[in-house]
Length: 313
Image (cartoon, rainbow, N blue to C red; front, side, top):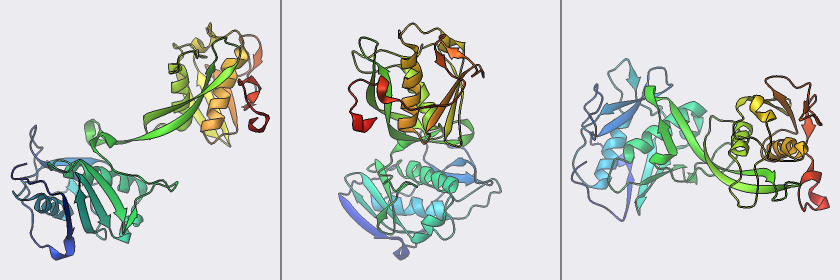
């Protein structure tokens, strides 16, 4: 985009603006060509269309792009991502961070609609030189997720679009994983930060990280790296983990209970389950490595964890 000027701080009220943006719709943008995101007619994925921006200041470009995104299209294949009642009341740009303040109707959007809306707005506005991150506010309150945690500023790395424009949202998470100590006779808890696809369940993420192995020197893996996860599901507070036969070829620990309870403790500590049922190729009526009964769901057991206080058991 041309003719941009970096402003340190600016505030604009959209209700005072009436200039329409120029928009060339109906064709896929060429590489490096400016674009606007719309949503398909079904409201399930994003559509990127070429856009010819007006030259001007950063404020003028933000205003014009937001106005263009709100306009109704004449296409039967895609439409504006803006629900009719959702309005941008004002914006504030400071140090390449753009705060967008929406009216209270923002909260009426359905979850899938809201994620697509955020993705479209952030990735469209980030094309403007001087806009690196975008923060969302409902009235003057920072946008929060269903758990009450603030979403924070979003950049292009926050969203990932695949072919067909299906959207995957990535987020950061903290996991508590258990691995074997240096002697291989006790479990040690390792806390790790991971960036993951929000379509993946926490329980599946934990299994993938356990198979990946520890990051801290002195800790040892508890699951063979060739193990494949066939499936992970949750029902009635029980997590069902189905692994392939690679799970049986374990030479990493001398006590099979360490492997089993590394899985159980990690999932119970990090997920929403109170018990874990482990199976191999769908079979749970077995003894793991000839000594651990897998025929019924298992509860968390801190007796296998090194240096655990009585109050933590």
